[in-house]
Length: 116
Image (cartoon, rainbow, N blue to C red):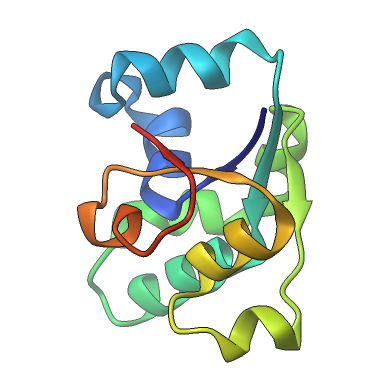
């Protein structure tokens, strides 16, 4: 399976694993699957850190590429095709054939294969 971590799942994986569902934790931990992190997650963190809504994400944002690489996750770039669709992570998941790992019921309802 090819997984795409949503922004909060990435944060929880790196900072607070207890927030992950057991199924999500196991799929990410086993390293049997290819795990992707979208550049859109760095963008989302930057917006929320800059607005003061998510100050605890600052440390992740400061070394985003290093943290992603240290976990052997693959960085997924954004394309114009991804941006045209309504929700960026759902669009990337569907266009790239990835299963999105998310606790967000709204994101799961958009039709992308999901895991939680």
